[in-house]
Image (cartoon, rainbow over all chains, first blue to last red; front, side, top):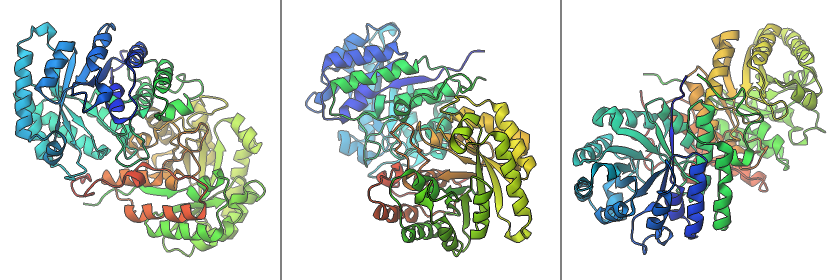
Length: 314
Length: 314
């Protein structure tokens, strides 16, 4: 029978690289994206369209998009903070745009100096821009709700606020919403609660992706909980790049390799070749040798004889 | 309403200390056990009854048992490899004895130089010993099936072998069986499969505990899977002592603090005070400063304002 497909979205070239000091040369980024796509990862967030003075590590995002678009079958994604970013993303030719909106208004003001209302206006302006494009050239537009599971400044963000923002983004014209555990506060119970509530609010098909961090070691546990509640896309960062899992405040994305191993072992189809995926680490390590890469499965290796007798086949 | 109780069993003084070079002084061990019991951990495996020349780190297990028995309400557990160990455990006054039996016969021969048949005979001899004791002085006797999820020597261990051993141990007179992921090979799908199969074989109430490692980063994900299938006891090691999670072959027990945080956040009753539990790390670190302790939650801290609005209450 057909296995269920779960999409792994690699965010290392964006979330990983924006969090480290080293600047990876464009050629290495291209090699990374090429190799990871060849390993079967179907979507890669290659960068952010933000001013180079804010994130010099990502200044070459447009060039990287141009390269990534030449890779057959790869969904090329990018983050944009505002209309200006979206214009540049469209010009570069991305397939998918995500705008992050922080559920914690304190965080939103501190981070991008915008209220929720101003951010929703930005979303509307981006939708207006996208509507000027022919349908077959229009990138998918996701509204990403960050700090959805709590904020280091505000603490708990009430569920009603998340629901309100999710509705506002769908009403403004987003194609879908996503939930981001920016602070690494999410726990399996919270994941289930919030995913169910948001799906009830905006429709089952309009929330399919989660961006989970591993700050408190619960990243993959949260994935297991989410898989039972209709989430089909998970972000990961190769080698957990950009977050030391043992340092406070670290970005600490889920390690893509561990995520891919777990999903594969559970009998999900991911399209990913695990050995090829783990080999991609060398490209990153060679290019930015001062940075650390993490990951349990890459260090320990696959179980002896894997997948025979190990993988769940249902 | 009443929350469901999930038992955390601390195995650091046994599994952690046997895996590190440093020898912790008895007084520090006592302080550790006292503090962790005071933090609410209901069961502690304080050592193994093996010859001191094999594991000098655990040579004072009998003295530690004597101390631990003075702590009100604490279940004092120990590992025994054979009848001789069980005799000493009984003499010391433990409340619970576990004998590990490796599902991989290759591993069993290499590790303790015994076949499965010889190990089952040992189990029978221990049961005979325990039957000579008055019922109220008889420790609980668990047959722990190690390498249950695969072996670094044999690879996959067929499920039928696990079922055969589980039945043999129950028939020999064990009070219950447990499953140990000695090699860190377990994955959520495998956990569900094997737990269901063993429960079907020996009865739901005779398999309640899992000993899961975090070698491939899936430890807590495996716990989430197991919680849905009637497992109510999980082993953990404070600070993941004894296993560098990033080194191949490491013991890599689940970190007790991360486990306790996750269970608490999911609305389970564990009896554990999270802040007090995390403070116990200092006792261990002071006593064996050359060893490393791990743990995501202790490093990152609890979410701001936890548990208000975070904990699942159903």
